[in-house]
Length: 283
Image (cartoon, rainbow, N blue to C red; front, side):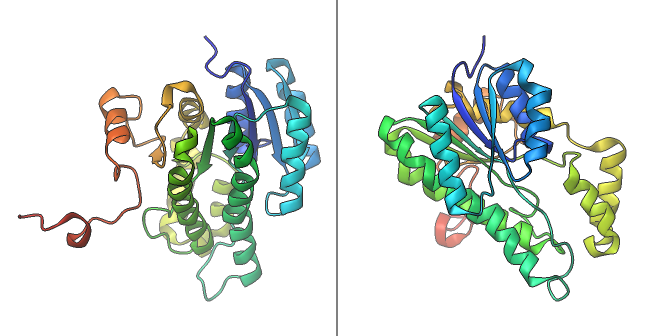
């Protein structure tokens, strides 16, 4: 049974890496997919590779440009008359290095694409979902969102922002039947892994060593993240919202775990645990 049959899904960053893997699985699940990316050639290549698996179109889009995002949403509505799902997978990792050494313009550009781009796509698509009182938004978190990640300050900060944006939007649109969640996809073998290896000492010895090991044998298959995204985009996850879920470490397929996420407001969020918020642990 196709879990996303006839659903219209926009996937930013859908022409390569994890975004491309999600595009493939969405097509197999019956979705009608719009991939958005900055590279026209990559979009064309992806469509040629996947057109036999389902209905797919591509729209060249820089998600950090408000006018281009509006164009993406308008063209999607013209083509399909609806938007059921938004996957914000577009992102960049650079600059890599200590804050005192990196290029400040690259740092700002990272925030513009990863955080501002996610915000613009959400803001532009939400009126459509609010009007029909239904929709699914899945944002991409990443390494550094829940723990310090030295030498990747822009990426980590942008991803913390994405998670907090996810939590806030989930509360703002919950009454309209819209679910907004974020996923941590794991260390998938994409160009970002290659960038760490190429950065060498700028990435820090720990990051470089782990990237090399993952490149050789321990990288997370992109299908792992794809399976979680399908769940969050489908009717199976209705009512689950405002959460950050790890595709690798969270046992999201387990009924007890799902129930905990559904019923515990603080579970899967960035809320700090301390005496101020939770009272004295010893009574």
